[in-house]
Amino acid sequence: MFRKRILALLAVLPLIASVASAIAGQGFVSARGGAFYRDGSQYTFVGANYWYGGLLGLEKDRKRGVERLRKELDLLKKNGVTNLRLPGGAEGTGPSTMWLASVRPCSQHRVNLTNLFSTAST
Image 1 (tube, rainbow, N blue to C red):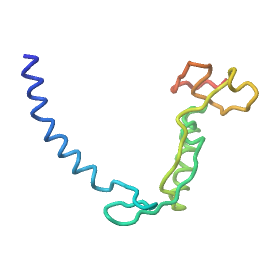
Image 2: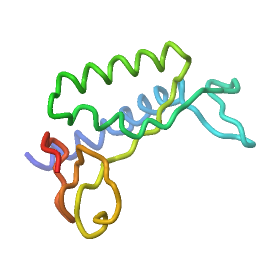
Image 3: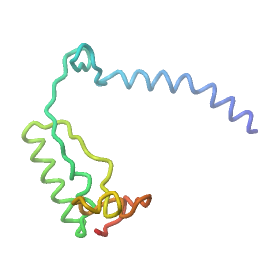
C-alpha cells in the first residue's frame, strides 16, 4: 500500500513541476545587467524601509495596531510605494541589548526565547 502511494506520487511530480514552472515564469522579476526585468520588460519600483510595520499587530491594543497598519499601507500605496522591506523580528531586553534602546513590542523577550504571537511588551 505504501509503495503504491510513493509510486503514484512519483508519477504526478513531473506534472506538478511543469505547472509550477509555467506559473512562476509569469510576473517573476529577474535581474540582468544591473536592472530588474519582469515578463521581458524593464521593471522599476518605489520601495521603502518599513521596519516597524510587521510589529504593529503586536500592539497591546491589537485593533489599534491593525487599523494603523491598514491606514499606513493605504497611504504608501496611494503615493506609489509598491515594495516594502520589513524585519523578521525585534529583540527585547537581555545581555545583547541592555545598553541599547530596543523596539517595543518585541518578538524576542529573552535570548533564545522567541514568541511571535505575544502581545506583551517588556
